[in-house]
Image 1 (cartoon, rainbow, N blue to C red):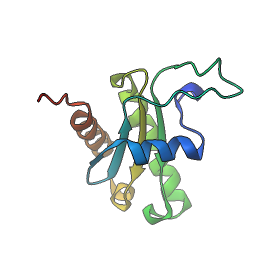
Image 2 (tube, rainbow, N blue to C red):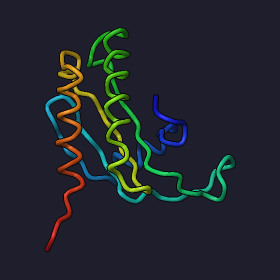
Image 3 (cartoon, rainbow, N blue to C red):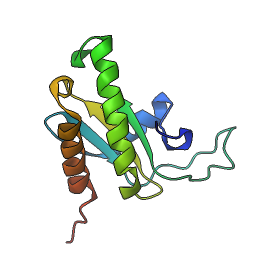
Length: 126
């Protein structure tokens, strides 16, 4: 289970990452990565402090029925938790499952997430 401070929760947070972040497509998922999240204070925060990298999952109906979606969500949550320490403390990540994720094993999901993060975190030199 992802700790509460490591989760994206509200729609504007997901929207900001998807619209402003970089994207990497893989066979079972699409990763959206925003290295610097906009710091906006909320009533529950301490003036918008940054608590570490956050991640959110999007598993839509195209993936399958409720049972399949929940299975994919559990597998993705475990895989993301293992890779979360690779992200900088100010980063946000949204993982959107593709329909192919329904038939994928945890190892395949882990491979795709790792490859996608490798691509997104690669430092570009001019």
